[in-house]
Image (cartoon, rainbow, N blue to C red; front, top):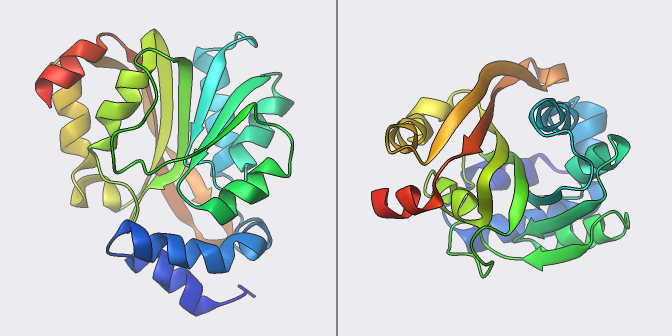
Length: 216
């Protein structure tokens, strides 16, 4: 059984970054037992496999944005990727990820704010479990595009239900029309298998980060 039902409620009803970090501070140690064990959290491996489909080169520099405890990073390492950086706003979750010794850098930063990462830094970015209720809104797409090199790949999940309700769909399409990125795949994928929850699995190739900045 999940360590604390109230903690889970806090995670998905957080109204600001401070409330969200408070929730993850309580959950970090038990996070994997709860999500993998009780909920059947399969999205991290699906995200890694999706990236591998469109960007299989093992020497790519990758950012795991919203890395949590490092589940996506583990899956990426299993596929042969080695140059992976981790980013999360929760220090406690980032500490759990650091304990896995799979990331080159550990960056504590809020995806709701501009990132202190130079333009065109990464060959690929993955972001799993972050575009959902109470977490990060669609404005973060622009930052992910900015820090990804032209022709680089961005793979992310969006919790089913939140896709249209929270404005993700509109921003994704706006950025396509602006030719900031082009769609590679968009399909339903298991998210929490034991709970019969699905997500939208999305992959884009970056065309012009400048167009994203102009569109913003």
